[in-house]
Length: 126
Image (cartoon, rainbow, N blue to C red; front, side):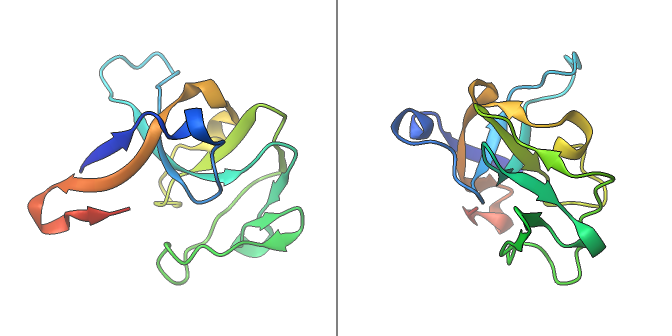
């Protein structure tokens, strides 16, 4: 997919839970493009997933953007430090996301993805 990215969003406000964002690669893989993930955990929060459901500080969050029955497996709780956010991919079963690399610094975020523009049959908001 190809998406439009608003690079100014986070100069006006902090990332919000549920935002789809583009972030810089930090694993040294120069052949891959930037990553696109969803903001799940905000600074100061604890993220867990007992029985496959994401909880923030012990409370379930609405993830209606995921297909019904999607499980999120996490080996251990993740505490999100100040100045960082936890990102998870929507393809939870196969996503290399914050469960692998932990919370990222907010300055690693390129911008908020707003609209899918390619392929033509999938044009629309994110």
